[in-house]
Image (tube, rainbow over all chains, first blue to last red; front, side):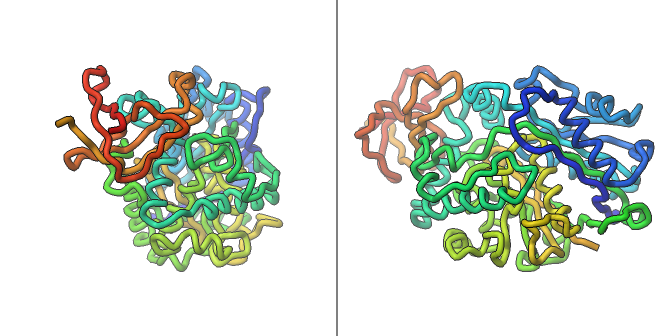
Length: 387
Length: 73
């Protein structure tokens, strides 16, 4: 397998865009990525698209050719990958494997989602289809309710971490203030989070990630070629691990440790030849505040049960020892589901290039992305190094 | 003796999906019975209900929902 690098990145601002179609979002982010890479359209030999639920939310399937047409990519192979909220990272991984194998030298990978034109109930139902439709959604389970049960179990096993959960939301909102692509530029307080509208106890609306429209694209190239083509710092993919777990929450070995994260992270660290302590900053999947807390433990940044203390001590804040979600995360940057995993990589590449402006990480040599689907039934961990 | 399970974790749902929005608030739990965990609805929740992890609940039979509904004992 040969080394692969990211040479182009592009994303839309995340938010509510009633006047922009899926095609518009694809064009905006895709063109940015191609321009950023400095390549010709004809250099792109395949397109990997991520989308979770346009068939339900927009009535649109067959996203591969839609994106191919929108970006003028001719007759290259195009396909769509779906793995709930991890769809973007799954598409990235397929693109990575294709270039690493030598099949293609340059490929485009993109993700898109359009959600905000539907009512909260319809969006909730659409997202619930990423759970078991008979055993979970059919009983009235929503994603907030599944993660609320994870939070209550965590409290039972490790102590009440309500304040530290809320602090994740506060910190992510603070970070988003410095990200022009973020959906929300709004400072919030601990009390606002805890006293917000109740969604599923103990989660309030401020513990939940956003409903968003948006798209993100990346150009991947063989590293040898990347060095010759790119005018920017080449960002090499040094680790990639994917793992799975049962679809249903109740069937998982643990409700407070995500086994899929443990396995995906172990594979990614082994491939990269690094330890968690070598990671300078990370974008982790904060679909809910409790998820961010569990993730920073499962990724090995902190011991199990000690994540809350680390958050309270500011270790995961922008100026901490391992800044988490400098982009603002799913909570404040936004969560256009199919684009999310790729937007996480967009942020890491931006940081590793030193282009993050006011939110620039102090230690920007190695960055990590962590993306889960469902109640961590799918997980992808990626590790990147600036060259 | 009725079939009984133990509450592993729970939540009170205040914002439901389209099909359940008229039933809020309702109580969902992971219930462990004979070593097997499953998601379950627990009937009879009110604002004054006290619920805690480890408490026992009993199965509601004949509900047509494959025994995934329990009630307080």
